Structure formats: C-alpha cells, structure tokens
Image (cartoon, rainbow, N blue to C red; front, side, top):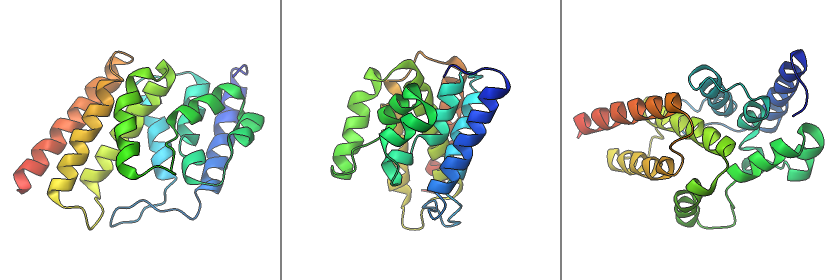
Length: 187
C-alpha cells in the first residue's frame, strides 16, 4: 500500500468494516459461538501488539485473510478495494475449499515454508489466535485428543514459518506449551 500516516489508519478501518460486513452472519465453532469477526481482528491485533508489525498491507490483509475462503468475496474485489499487495497476501492465506479438509491441512504444512515473509506473519497470528480459541472455547464435539491433534498440526504448519518474527514465535511457543499442559492435565 502506498498510503501513509492517517491514510493507513483509514484503509485499515475500511478493511475492518469490509471484513465485518462479509463475516456478519458467521460464528466461531466454539460453544460460545462468538462473532467470526473477532478472529481476524485478533490476528491483526496479535501482529501489531505482540509482533510489533507496522506494515499497513500486512495488517489490512490480516483483517481480510479469510474473506476469499469463507465469504463470497473475490480476489478481484479485494484488489480493486485494497490493492494488489493485499489481494496477493489474502490469496496466499486462502485454502482451496474444493479440496477435502485433510488435503487442505496437508497442503498448509507443505506450503508454509514457501509463503512470503508477510504471509508467514499472518499465518503466525492466525495459528496463535486459533490455538488460543481451541483452548478457551473449543467446539463442543472436539475431544481432548482432537484438540491435541490440532495443536500438533499447527506446530507443523508454524515450523515452515519460523525465522520471520521472534516475538510472534515466542508467543506461539508459550500458547502451545500452555495448551499442551492444559490438555495433558485433563486426560
């Protein structure tokens, strides 16, 4: 993005509004069924306030990272509204929903090391947010074993993203360790 100063804040707020509108009917899978928009906002917050990421395109893409995958938003629409850089970042974060879930998960592991630096930052925020949510408010039908498997899977995805931000890595490792301790104690 080529805007600076207050313009960056305006674009970020426009992205928040856009994402909130697109995700307005969606809920998280946890028992609390919190509004889905909480997740992309949490990802952007983690990047800015834990990882100290200041790149406006990364923060805007973090807010929008699930719009192509989980709403009727098109890549072209993102590009015309937020620019090519944001579009490309969101596309890097987008799973192909036509594939079976197991294949999508395998591909995330396989492709994580190939992501751009910016997409790796967003991937860190995404996985930190998801692990935290799985521990705080898991889906009612997720057994302890399924939650453990999810933690293991995120660790394999994150392995390919390491080396981009020490603060996010440290935070992820802390969240993962707390999760493993909590799930181990419930067994």
